[in-house]
Length: 244
Image 1 (tube, helix red, strand yellow):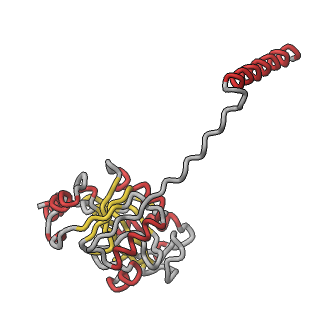
Image 2 (spheres, one colour; image 1 turned 30 degrees about the horizontal axis):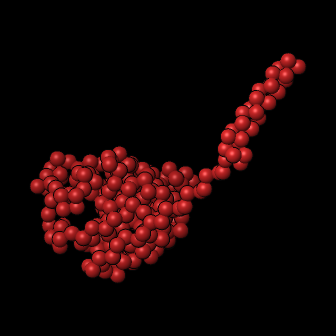
Image 3 (tube, one colour; image 1 turned 135 degrees about the vertical axis):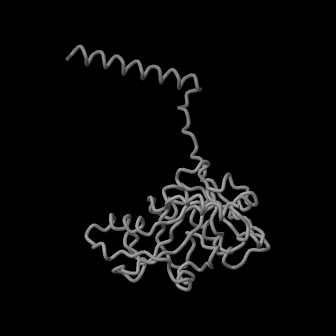
């Protein structure tokens, strides 16, 4: 034991001597610690003359809440009359799979009347790709797993009434973003979205003719989204109706 301590003491002395030599080589002053890198200042999304009150509010929200990847893109008014390939090209999206939508679901049998409990909320915003469709039973299954003490009959997911959806989100159909809503509504993101490459998606941007592109991981972080398998691919026949 004594010989081991002696050896350790020798190594320690050697390290101290090396540090002393380095200090002398630097002019007798210990090397200064690197200055902390200042936090990156991210400018808010640029304003556009077409911005409505809702789009302006949404741009302000993404800036204030650190959704730094968000970019906004105005599209022609015939956007929703065109197929997915046309929409993909007008947005410059990597593929049609990167085009997503946000819908509002209501659990009509929920034990709560509001959205205060994200694991058992009356309403949810579901984000998924246009090339898939949400499955209400899959959504119910996810919520039942988060509420083991609540009976199965307490989960019945349906599309929310349009007027109620507008009241909760502040956005009309085709313009809904899963963030920046006047009432915080929990978000469920289809796990299929997380498999996209590059990991970005296009969503509603506050106006039917404005779309928002965001990074998936940042969207999850900022919204605290529940990521779960809640969608199934469209059939070949269904795809034909939106692709052609």
